[in-house]
Length: 189
Image (cartoon, rainbow, N blue to C red; front, side):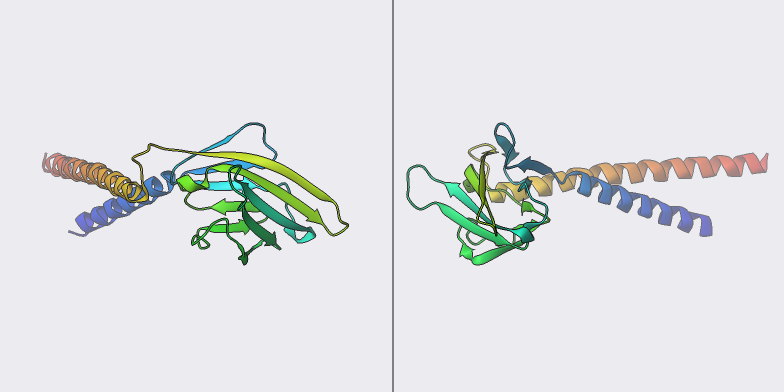
């Protein structure tokens, strides 16, 4: 009886370990940088990390503009000491908990279609020098894709993972019962 309990415990640990590995493997991050050649393509709902050319943001005042060619109201976000000044940032409206800066990297945890566009990073140094560079960002995904359908996809993927893992558990359980029966037969002979 103790052997059965031990095998059951090992099976459960194996299944939960596989579930954790599959869950973390499904997380997608895309890295881009402001001085890259060409366009940055990101899938709708993915995590985006944008390198901002400086590791130490304490030496600079940073401004990120979203350039809208057809309006005068460009989105603007000011960054100092790895902090987004929320009072001076209308670029990521109502999404401040999903957008952060860490070691000179702008992190958007879940990109949305409205994030597409051209962004200009301006670096203001204390001596008065200004450096700027642009990044073209395109969010890819179907027109019918929305944030709610993204959560449905995550649920469906999770259900498929559970079916595979439960199938593995059942197969392992049957294998263990068959092999333990053979051991008893070998001992009786």
